[in-house]
Length: 236
Image 1: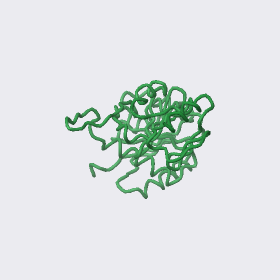
Image 2: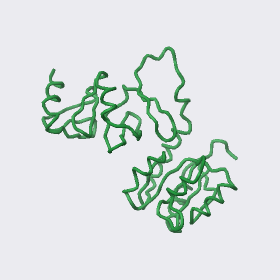
Image 3: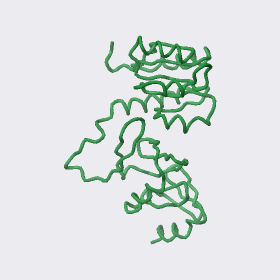
Image 4: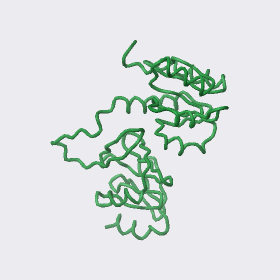
């Protein structure tokens, strides 16, 4: 067995959904489908027979849902949820899911999820300190790991109720955190609140108007209540 190979299991009560994901995974190097299951009960038995690194898990299944299944496991492997219902996204992230794929799952979107899993799997010990490293970091919990994010790599932060999406140079980190807390930390580092849902790095703003800012290909709104402060900060 290749020690670097990702051992996968697909769990879905729809045979066609299993077939689609299995077909995609056959095209991905160093990925093997070890088991396919049509129920959470069947998957529980498969976990006792095989070493599984990553599960592609449907949420809505009879008898036991995917979320109930994960809650029943003491040390679950990596989880990528697959579902036709967008409403489950936040609950999935609360369970530290690697990613959340909407059906029908496309090959490009699946490849992106696999890449996200690879980055977490091979990331260095998050709390390793380097005495010569003087860069500023923020530390958050994401996907069962403590992640140190260099402040210089953050483009903007988007609030989703009790969660935030931290958009960085290398990708997006989702964590259970309040944007108000991160604003306190990052305002001294050159960040600006432009909306109740957006905190941006001023150095990443390529252009702006009274109603929006542009960061690379993203256009973010400036709310009326923050407009004067944004104008004062960016024109200063």
